Length: 263
Image (tube, rainbow, N blue to C red; front, side, top):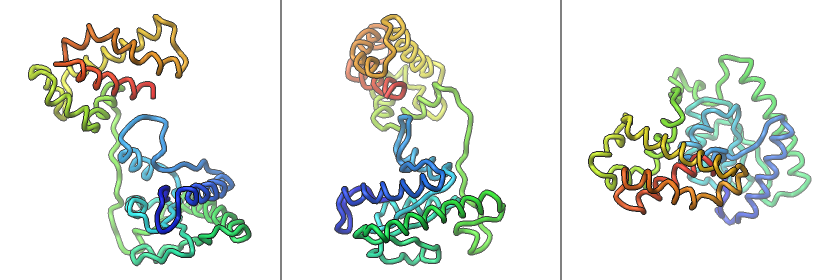
């Protein structure tokens, strides 16, 4: 859904719409969240695609035809998974998605009409989820137009350190730091396959952080965050000169690892 000002509606408007949608979704027995929301730290685009693929059902508000929303709707429809589309009564239908039923609500959010909209959205949520769960041939959009291969995301089991390395690879700043600033002899881990030395760097950093927290009896999240700079200083002598050309490079890498573990 839109969250920023668009088509004459400000952030406060979309916050109210989000509350309305959330109420209806909870009434349907689901836990509402934006596809960009997640407990872990990572690249937001990757998180969005993962959530679009994995969530059991998605409600998409195309009001204002926000480009990001329309793109995310297209991805969800390519996965051919249960999807409900809603829009306000001031937004015109889009040609490509017009064949899919849209639930409309008044842009002025009139109370009586919103009560009915929430009731209908809850009913549709339950019915759509039940149909998709019980009917192996269920389709939201794609299969109505012929036989297609539904888009899928590849899943693979990797170690915790490999996950961190994947996240670092996706973070351009970290990739740039590892590939151009780390001494030549240390760069082998920047390619698609991470060598043991790169894994050792991540492992040493993780263990160094955890060891510091254990030795200083730091366990509360707020205390852990407050200790970031002290931990960074404590590990610098061991990790900095061995792997990095400068303090700036070391701090950049340390902060990425710390954020992935504790933010």
